[in-house]
Figure 1 (cartoon, rainbow, N blue to C red):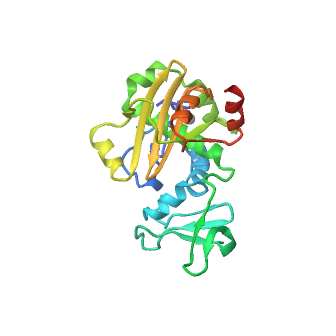
Figure 2: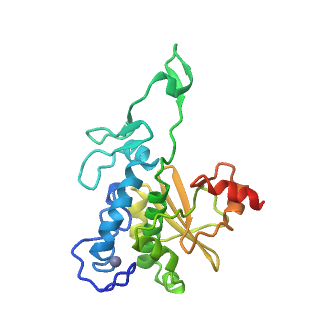
Figure 3: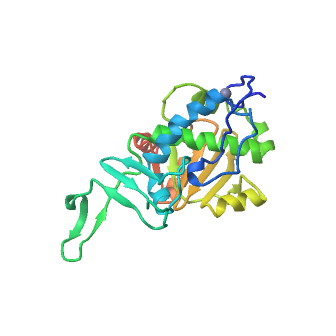
Length: 256
Ligand SMILES: [Zn+2]
């Protein structure tokens, strides 16, 4: 088999999960050898960070989803340690490292306040890489015609080396037009009941958008390059849209 990321001929021993097992996926996987063991183990490094040190950990904890090794979801964002219920009950999030000062508008009488936790804590590159990896594997497996239309060279280069250059993504649920589901039929349904939604939209020749939504967190990334020309339209239409890494926001503003 030839690895779709590094083109190396290989006899892989490992199975590559398209959507991480720590989101609850057991069956949507790559054909063995389509991702070599070297790429697979490189991917698990950023996957770990993206699952445990971003806003994804809040959702994984809230949904009581077990990790790949069958443990309670646990991670750290900023100074907070976030953990799900030990018995995998839904709706519980345990946050350690929290003081009253961390709460905005805290009312001592009711004990209610607002907690602001960063969505990403220097974990943006890991999140970008996880989105790109998931996107390409899903398109390859479920939308082969789309896969064959492009060479995805920038994406492959980015994931096949230790290169940590930023690749921008957006958190937004706005759809310029209706996106199409990447997986079809039973896989689409299987992932949907695990709260995973994978969609794509061909915006133009240099922009193939991939949207990954887990629970209430929608993320959109361009699988072809770091081009930002699609971002303006979405951010103008959706005032909740946020661009990451944050330094890209000033680049967009300069363009306007
Ligand atoms: Zn490879």
